[in-house]
Each structure stands twice: as C-alpha cells, then as structure tokens.
Figure (tube, rainbow over the protein chains, first blue to last red):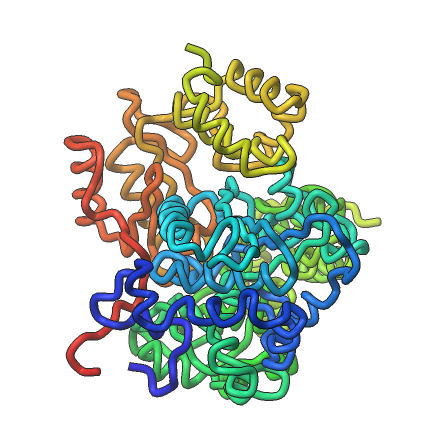
Length: 434
Length: 177
C-alpha cells in the first residue's frame, strides 16, 4: 500500500469497486460537475485549473489551464475537445487502467473541460488495439447520458456536451496532437506544421483542445478540493499533483504506481516496484517512455518531476519507467527502440523517414559484429541531422536511445566493433556520406 | 447483400457523430473488416461512395494504419509485442514458442486458416509482458503453459478465459490495508 495519498487510483483500489456509475457516484463522483456546470463561469474554471499548476500528462507537460486560455475568446462557431487516449509510447500503460477501471472519472473530467472551453462535442481518440477499453467507455457514456451528465442539456442547465469514442487504427504518431486531429478527420496521421496551433485551427479547422486521459481525470479532484490543495502536492510550484508512473522491465513488481511528483527514482523502483527482480543490480533505466534518453544508476536520486528529470538530461515524458538489469546489452536495447521508431515514422519529413532506416541498418550492423569504428560517428551525425529538423517531436525522440546509450555505454559499441575487427569478418562497403 | 445495406443502421449511427463525413472512414473500415476478416476492395469502393471520397483517398488512409488487413487472415490473428519493454521479459521466446507450436513465422498463416502470426510494436501492456493480442483480446504475463492453454481453448471453443479483463496492475492487496 502506498504511503502517499492516492488521487486517481484511489477509487479503483477499493475492494469491489467496479467503475460503474453507481460506484463512482458513491465515492462523490460527478459532484464536481454538479457544482460547476451552469454555476461557475467557464473562465473561472480555467482560472482554477491554471492556479492548480496542472500540466499535461501525455508527455510534453504543457500547463493545461494555459493551453485552454489560448482558445479565441470571441469565436462564435463550434469548438472541440479531444481526449488523447492513444497511449502508444512504449513503457506507458496508465491510461488503459484509468479508462478500464474508472471510466467515469475520465468522463467527468472531459465534461468539465468541455464546459470550461465552451466545446459541445468531445472525441475520445483511443488507440485501436484497446477494444475492451473502448467498449467500457461506451458503456459508461451510455450510463452518464441516461443520468444527464453527458449529452444535450446537462442536468437541465441548457449546456450541451456530447462525448464520442473514436478508435484509432494502430499508428504511434497519432498520439501527437495534430496527427491525432488528422486521423480523426479520416486521413493519414501526418502531423501538421505549427503554427497555426490547434487552439485556433484544430479539428475541422475549429478551435480545439487536446488533453491526455490522465490530465482530464485530475480535473474533478481539482474542482472539488480546490487548486490550492492540488498545487501543494508534488514538487511545487512547477510540477504539481501526482503522476501515475508505469514501471516495467526487470523489477519485482512492475505496474502502475501513483506517487506525488518529485519522489526519487530510487523510491519508485525499490520501494513501490519492489526492487530488481533478481540479484543482478540495475544497469540503466528510462524515466519517461521510449522517447526519453536512458539514465544510469548514478541518477537514482533524481526527483521525478519535469524540471529535475530534464536537468539530469532526460525527460519525464509519459511517466513510463523502464528498468534494465546488469547484463542487458545497451546496443541491443537501443536497437529495439530504434526499430520501433523506424516502424512508426509516419514518413512526412525526410530526415526522420530516411534517417530512421539508416540508424536501424547501422545499429544492426554493429550488433551483428560487422561494424566499423566510423559507424559511431555516422550514428551521431545522423542523430544530429534528424533531431530538431522535423515537423513534430518524433525526430527528437527517435535519436534519444542511441545518443544516450552512446554517451553512457560507448564502450559496449566499441567492444562489439573490436570483436568484429578481430574476427576479420567481411563487412559491407562504407556508406557514402555527403 | 451489399455492405451499406447490411449495416445500414450502424453506419447511420456512426455518420451522425461527425460534422464531416470523412471522419467516419476509420469506423466504417472497422465494420468492413469485421464483416470479412479483412477489408475487401468492393467494401472500399462502397465506403468511398458513402463518404463522397475518391477510392485513392480511402486507400491512402487504409494503408497508413497497421490494424487494417488487405488480405484474408487466419481466424485468430496472433500479434506478439516485440518492443523493448516486452523483449526485456522474454517476448522473443514467446515468438519462438509460437513458431514451433504452429509451424509459422511472423507474416504467415497456418494451412488450416486458423492462425496468423505477427510480431508487432508496443501494445501498451508493458508492466504485464510478455504479452500478445489475439483478435480483440489481450493475453498478458505469458508462459509456455499459458500459451498452450490459450491455443487449445481457441481451437476448441473459439475464445479463452485467460484473456485480460479491465486492466489493473498490480492488483490491489486485500487484507493488509
């Protein structure tokens, strides 16, 4: 049992809690909505969220209230809310639990956000593989519609908020907010060039907010208990509230652990997740999903909040913490992630489309003991020419595994190449570099 | 019966959710895939007609997404996650087991048309790996024994009680709280 107060996982950890509307209402569910919709001015709801310091839980960590504030005030046409439930960052599996175990907590957050930004329609863009999750959400929406929390004329206030589940179809890039909008419009999920931002030109070119599942699930609690309460949790002033960290890899008890932002990696891995699975010590960890650079046991006391993880040279990202034990080949691990990015590159920007293929080829060659010392420079050169030169942040993400493993475990690359030289294997001709 | 007639009500319901017809493309492709196990060319033409799109607009979209099949698949489509988090806890071994048990490699189907195998990227179940998805269901924390039971269940009854329910991991510890 966690020594910290739980917010998002509290209900679902109660014995017998099913996530039905009745169960959710018993825990005080939909009280925030009852006390807010039609009673508090939408601008005040935005102000409350801004004051709470809530930042996006999808990966970028942008302040939610500020994001809402970018919507044009005087625009008369429709606005949209999109709940980003695409959860496809390797290492991340929290949204799945939030949706499947306590769907109404997410729905209440969605309706509150709709009210604050003046949206009458919300789409939950859920990753296509989560068939069970989409069914659970649809059933919950049905319950909430009958109870008057969702749909036309919510609780007789005259406010409308329709919520629809929209399944993706298997594309990592659709977690990027503008790619998500393209996909929701029935197109290929290619990220858009920004600006214009979704706040002014989003879904169907209308003002749109895209928020992550976990971000939205926090809203009922912030409204009910007040922004000051929320802002005091975690690492104020910049990283407030809790995070549901997803621990995976070589630990004894992998899984979702909700802790206040700012606990150390050591506490998360050794107290909550039970430590390493065997007597092998930790060799490496990733603090925030596949897009976050690898860190070493020297970083175990880094606080898990946006600022401290960034200062350590990585990022808090989506909260997916993957732990690797001694004996894991870092070249192999980086290649596995690189193969993921190669598979998932949408193909819009040539540095990413072509570069990811070259990175995979070069990494495979090194791992197969057919590499040469120049390959290391080739890798770094490629990384340098991808990061920051693409439309979306995918380019920065895909080079993280290789750059960080080369930084901390360069010797492993060198050893593989030395073995290749010793074996005197026939190697392919050098790749021409311009 | 044509696709649009057979699913008239479901299609109308989906279309009512979006102000722009094209948004219904992916949902309609899912219905077409459910119908045949893959999206047929005639279904693509019908969907294009329904949504006032050109056939290339449908085709360019369908080929972007990995979940749509353009050719017939086995009755059970086994997709094993091979990304790093699952690979750390043995997903490569799971693929080897399946290869040995069914005699197919990723990308192939068994001769009896029952099983197809794919090695896929992350399915968001990293804490409960190694894992696989078969049709709509997740199967997590795989062992060889569990895999045998799942395959036997699918052969005999078409489903398996070992599939995942609403996800929560770790499960709540009762008694000591």
